[in-house]
Figure: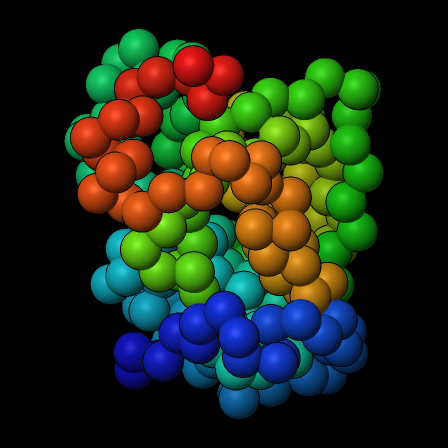
Length: 188
């Protein structure tokens, strides 16, 4: 079932989400929520969706950077962003740690800030400790665009939006991004 994605201004998006217990993760209710969030993310289309974005203050996010989305991106941009397909998975109660000090800056958008984009500097590499959809411990080492997706979704679980981290002068509509910025590094 497709869920409603709440937009900026919804108070829940600014509140830290609560952790889930193993029992809750394995419940029919949360397993159904995971399926519904996956369908909602796919239909949007997006590469990640956190539970607060569908009105639930839970430490849960779904992630998938599908190959069909990558076909619309030039090989040069894929290489520049270190972007490659990421299989569907779930992160629950994540703890994130930057790996190294290198930051990279790219434009990003958000399903809860529909119609806009901005340049955001984020850690190039991260390590995430979490539980998966089966309540099993998982450690994710990620770099490039995948690391950006993880940081963006975990921000949602902590009540933070990308607009809190953006370079204010880079904030743009999707139309103006396509006209003026697409394919260019944010520094230009």
